[in-house]
Image 1: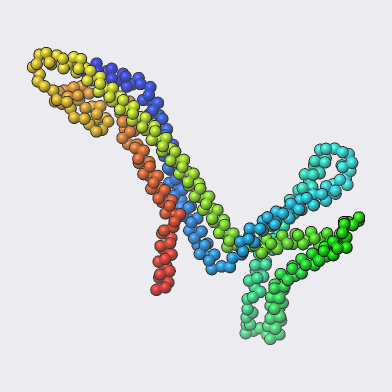
Image 2: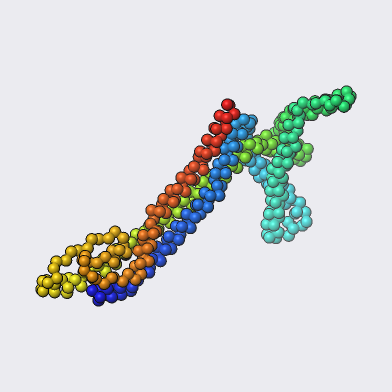
Length: 392
């Protein structure tokens, strides 16, 4: 039996699979824990919960506000981009013509020509950006004008009649100017179209000297002002805020699902490594038991059967714990040397304390918290309770 203990220990200690599979299991466990920590941090920071709450509040506010048509908001950026492409093409040719006046075009240098093309494109791109920026810059004073124009004028006690009358006249002029803005733009649009329709009727073919400069200026001004007007008409801060919040929540949801998928793969990798380690543990446990049983089978039981003075032996009951199974004697009631566990002590501890089921349980808990934050059950219950209190 002592020889069985020694040879069993040497066999376990020299088995290279013990170190390899223990390291593989530890590495997979650490990776799965890091992924779970990222998920836990995302949930505890409540970024998803805050984003979902802001989106709920914005949607409730949007229900009571006037919204711009969806098609107008959809075409605003294509219109600005289209005018930008036209500016890039048109003014690119203009600036290439201007730069060629320096004499570089006459030299015939390919590098200079390429530089002229690139430099000629830059002003067109800048003009497109300026058009979009101009629309945003005009939207602020126009919103203030729109809010101030219909506001009723109040008369203070110390305001004279003449002063009040002048203020009333100024207020009506302000309102009339505000309401005349669309009519002015439409009139300008019809004027330019009528002018070019007349030019087309007068000249079935392009005139040899080209069209009059003011006509071209009016057409380019109409296109530019039209792009700004479309951008202004499509201005909807509530809808823009909703879009930003929805994209933010969509990004946070996608990021969490991506992290959750990586965590699931990490847990699956650890489950495989843990299963390999457990299989190795069972293999080595069986090997040690077989070595001890070989000592009984090859020598002890044979001598007991010859002298028949020691009585019968009873097999010991099996143990559920892996470490107890290694210490379990072959037969009960008979003193036997303990098997040397060696590196199997750490292997058994890892198997018993680091069950993959615990990782999956924690991940399910985090996924449920994520679902609750997305649904916002607490927020909705609170909102319903507040509404009920208001009605009461």
